[in-house]
Each structure stands twice: as C-alpha cells, then as structure tokens.
Image (cartoon, rainbow, N blue to C red):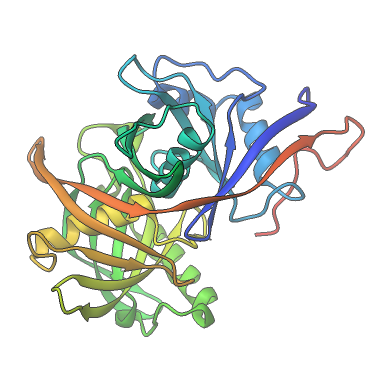
Length: 339
C-alpha cells in the first residue's frame, strides 16, 4: 500500500458517523461523481483507501464517510463519493447534513449574511442541497433537500423466516424496502438490534434479484440498498406523523440516525399512501432516539412516476480530527472487519 498518511475530520449526524476526507491521497478519476463511483468500485487504489479508513483498527463495521471530489460542473460547490464497509453508496442524507455543517464551519463555503446558506453538492444519485442555518456564526441546523423521490412498488408480498409480509419499495437516492416491524413480530428497540439486522438482511436478499431492485432510468442506481423497519407512533396535536425506524443497509449495517436518504424514500411512500398529509411533517426517530423532521417541499415527475422533493432536517456535530498513518510493515493493512 502506497498511502502513508490521510487527514480526516469526523462528524456524527443523529449518532451515525461520517468521516470526511477533504483531500484524498489517491486520484479518483471520472467525468462526474456518478462515473467516479462506478470507476471506484473497480479501482484497487481507491477501494484500498476506503478499506483503510473504514475497516478496523481505524474504523469499524458500521463506519461511514466520504471523499471530497470536484463537482460535476460549476453549479455545485463540490462533489462527494460516499463509502461504507461494503463499498460506495449512491446517496447519503446524514452525510449530506454533515457536509453542510463542515463546509460552512470550515469556510469552504462562505456563510450567507441572511443566516441561510445553500451548500450544493453533487452525489452519485444527482445534485442535492444542504441548506445550512446559522445564528451568530454558529450552525444551528441543516435542511437536506433530496433528489426527487418516488414509489416503485407497493404491497410486494414476501415470505420471510418470520412469516409472510408485505413491503413497499421507495426511491430516495437509493432504493429501500419498507416493512412495518410489527408485521414480523418486532419493534424498533435497541434490545432487538440483532433481530432487526437479521430480518433487514433477509428482506434485501429476497428482493435483490427481482425487478423491484432495478432503477427505472439509471442502471448505476440498481439494487435494494436497505430495509427500513418502522414503528407507527401516531400523530401529534399538529397532525404531524410520528414514526420510528431502523434502517439496515449495505450488508447488515444499522443506521444510528433515522437515515437521510431512507427518510426521503419514506416521505415518498407515506405521501403516496396519503398517510403524510399535505403541509404536515414526518417526525422520524432513530433506534437511538435521534430525530429528523421531514416534509415535502415540491412535486415533480420522473418518467412515469409522480415524485416529491423531500426535505430532511437535522444537525451534525464534529467530534474529532485524525491523521491516520500506515506502517509499511503492518501485515493487517488495509484492515479487517469481523462481521
């Protein structure tokens, strides 16, 4: 391995980590961020960098991060290539929120004097905005404005180890299967972590080779990225919908946040079912008790699909910066994972 040092800044959004590499020490070629992702999957140097930062001992099985890249054109401030222990993802809402905080706090994007700064970011699934709110020079919150999100299928019947169940398939930058946790005898509770991960992986495996895993317009976005297991917690006095979810993505990773791109797909599914009423919000809680506040801020069409523009509001916090090193004598480079 030729890499010797890598500088990183670490944030968390609702408890989910996001490791930012502002200056990746290896070239990440491509004509766009989407193209960079496709090439990175087969590029040993880029993939080894991902592994080195994500795998133990420098990371862990649920690590997440991003390599900053040039934008696709002058319309965005920068691009980002998202990664986790199993590869490179097409979307990451919690990471977009963290990048918004980082961009303004670091001065990479100058804060607007109005107190609202749009940080425009090219990601593999398209162009998104982190709308950063500041007060007296401090970031107070970020609105993640997602790519158009829509429902691919509803009421898909599957036979699981926990019995028959029905899932909805929604797209919010990545494709997710939505499953009511109670339908498989579970609730979204920390005590059920192992069972939630197991059924999340099972649902994904049941759907991965089906037409439901195919993106309608871009094969680079194919694949069931994750399973969203949700609890329905009713409505508050204002008529806002309250739910709690555990999103199991990639190969058994459990999102500690309510999942940004998952929340975008959840908004699309709930809107299509009429459960999320016009002008109302989704209060979306995670398995660790953190919350995103979600709403529909626009409508559009994507091919034959009616789509919404979800906005997912949360906050990210820095918790460290690191210079990771590689000893050329280390036999465990780039690292390892135990699950």
